[in-house]
Image 1 (cartoon, rainbow, N blue to C red):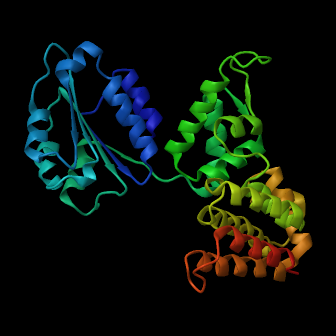
Image 2 (tube, helix red, strand yellow; image 1 turned 135 degrees about the vertical axis):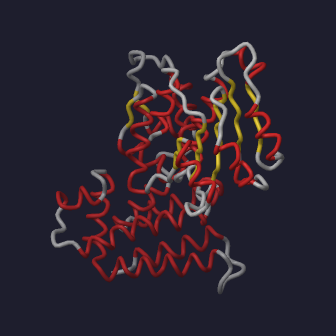
Image 3 (cartoon, rainbow, N blue to C red; image 1 turned 90 degrees about the vertical axis):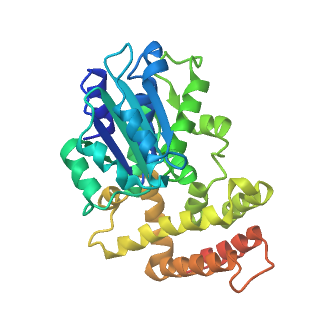
Length: 341
């Protein structure tokens, strides 16, 4: 069952006694928890019938006792246990899970990992609870997720703008959602476009999030692919003056991911633009950049770029180099990359 399905059921007043939310992706666990805390009960009901525990400070007996109380002046009560992975004696919830109170909605958020499926607690939950596993969005699905989330906020967004957000915000869905919501708030009622039909542009991202549309990892990778040394050095010069915009710890992994994906193209039978589009998830900018890199470097050149990225990543953490600045390391690396054939 998806997070959206759980919330839609709640909107229809369809509840189970226990919801166990677990997994590596915080975003969906937080979404369900937030709804449970603020929407299941009315404000008047919540005063008497909402109890929130945090795993680090929670005592299992207090949690069970809260769950066994009957609601006051309401049909049901809600008990939330957040950060359950930090709770001692978590397995002692088994007695309640085995025999839950029908008037209590008990929602547990167990982040970063999942329960051992061989354990008794998991087996009991499987019988009496709704278990929701929140998995990380795969890297190849992230741009699609960003596009869908933007549309859910009533906005359009270009493929290149999606790539900008993807490259700079990583796969932290909470952070991505917060930044998109901040954009949407700033663009509300933007002049010249009808309400609900605004488009998020690269200019908007630069203005409200602070990601430069010209000086970013996406443009750096494209400059290297084109062998445009002047542009690549301008971007690195910008990073030198704005260290937070392009720290070496962010730039090198992003470049490695891009060129490693291009490297895999050499295993394909056909290397036309049409054949590459699905490989790059129909991102036309990434596809064209890959074609340029393939034509300009060939197999040996891309392989050398990957080796240089690995070498300078080690230098960046002090292996074989303890005094060179990050900006100087990246400039040196890019010059060697563009010389690769």
